[in-house]
Length: 152
Image (cartoon, rainbow, N blue to C red; front, side, top):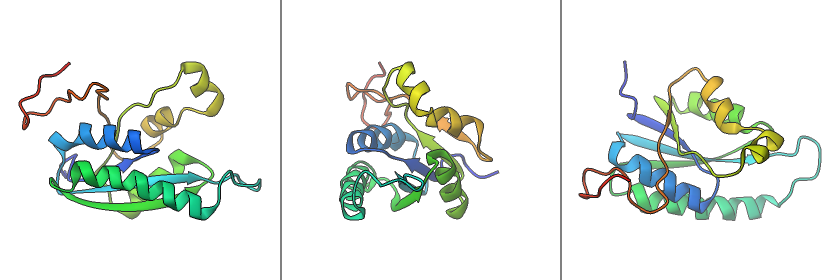
């Protein structure tokens, strides 16, 4: 069996999410990370932003991942497009032969999650590979044995 963190797929939604997720992954990271940003397509309706705007946003998101992980592992990036975020993440995981999908929980009330669809729940219950949910430490004190920091 491959190491869980050998080739990680890291879904990222925003620069802040990318920083938090990459920072949480850093002490555990293996050989490579594929950061994926999913652009949710409207499924026949007009998209919320242009392709150029989405690509600029993805570049900012990926820059945050590179800042956190480049010194620790090989980082690849991919923009994926789909009407179902979780299914799109699963497709990318299969394409890149990820050993796991790793993410940190995103904020938002349970009501918002119920109204918009809970991607985290879909990721955990609908995949054919391990999913690792890492703690998100907003105060910057991640469980990182390499920096002498304490856990919160």
